[in-house]
Amino acid sequence: MTNIKNSDINEYFKNKHVLVTGGLGFLGSNLCRNLLHYSPKITTIDNQNALSEGRSFNICNIACKLNVVCGDVLDTAILTPLVLQSDLIYHLACPVRQVENVNITSLHISHSLSILKILEICRLYHHRPLIIFASSWLVYGKSKGNKIKETSATHPITSYGLYKLISEEYCKYYYETYGIPFIIFRISNLYGPRQQIKYNTNSMIGWYIKRAMENSTLPVFGDGCQLRNYIYISDLIEGMTRCIVTHKCVGEIINIGSESSTPFREMVETIISVVGLGRIDYATWPSAWKKQEPGDLVLCINKLKKITGWCPLVGLKTGIQKTWKYYVKNIENYL
Ligand SMILES: NC(=O)c1ccc[n+]([C@@H]2O[C@H](COP(=O)([O-])OP(=O)(O)OC[C@H]3O[C@@H](n4cnc5c(N)ncnc54)[C@H](O)[C@@H]3O)[C@@H](O)[C@H]2O)c1
Image 1 (spheres, rainbow, N blue to C red):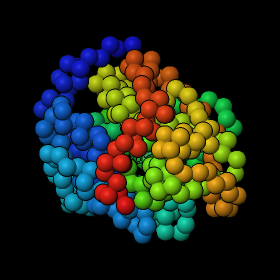
Image 2 (cartoon, rainbow, N blue to C red):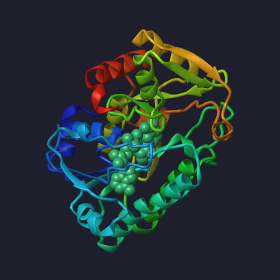
Image 3 (cartoon, rainbow, N blue to C red):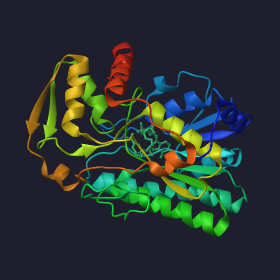
Image 4 (cartoon, protein in one colour):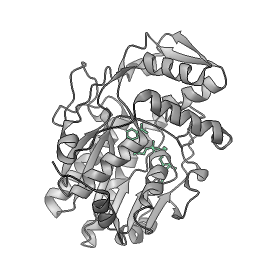
């Protein structure tokens, strides 16, 4: 296990040019704000993706000193100089995650090309930045409630999970064949401030907090007993940062989430008790949702803990309180 100090993080990022794709989104904006403590050379590219109701970007998220390029990661002409100036690339840009329909499937699958474009630019120009790819626990597919390790079988049941898995394969191929370094993070259920909360397409926790603040119903499909693994944004960023700084995770796939799983219903009840408003409304599963329900998530995060000594610090109730307080102050930017 590596003992990483703040001075190691400072030293690692000092003078590094960092590119964050999707930096107006939830994870991207929180990450950029954090990275600015270590390096002034942070650039983001974001196309302000606004598919129908599923708007995910938010311009107010990056009210900070950031170099923002408005453009699509699928646009090679815009992407090439950004990739070539970067020592470290976080590839986070991603279409909204809606329940599957024809358009969403095409959007997800075609988005697999975005990581391929980054890798191809690196190959063609003999450039070797470290590439961080934000993958998802949904690459594992339907679970039977057993603990999921990085070595567990992958069998996505959504086009989102499939696009993540295809992107992971591209990373692995370009690493093994051309030596382009990567770290893949398979992220669990992420929540916290700066997430789109108007619709339930990006964040169940954020959307439920908004519904509770309006004293509305919080719909729960089925009995709400399915397990989820909720990780607060600052814990995720700390875990990713430590992993990068150790230099020991290049070419690795890393699960990142919290220590334990929580029944979905308990998460909703916690929101109602923190906000002091709202009520659960149990409903039958709509068939499209039921088809894509992956079952219980019990994630093993021992690999990351062992390598970096990192441990998630923010419990679910505290994280919900912090998130709620953020939206109490900033709600007008998210409606
Ligand atoms: N939020 C979660 O619970 C979670 C869990 C697992 C993995 N992830 C992954 O983490 C990453 C970030 O997630 P998030 O919750 O911050 O998403 P988000 O929707 O909040 O942000 C994504 C950003 O990417 C931008 N974008 C989309 N398509 C683009 C394109 N073609 N070119 C340029 N910009 C584009 C959007 O405008 C948006 O600002 C995603 O890759 C996501 O799949 C998120």
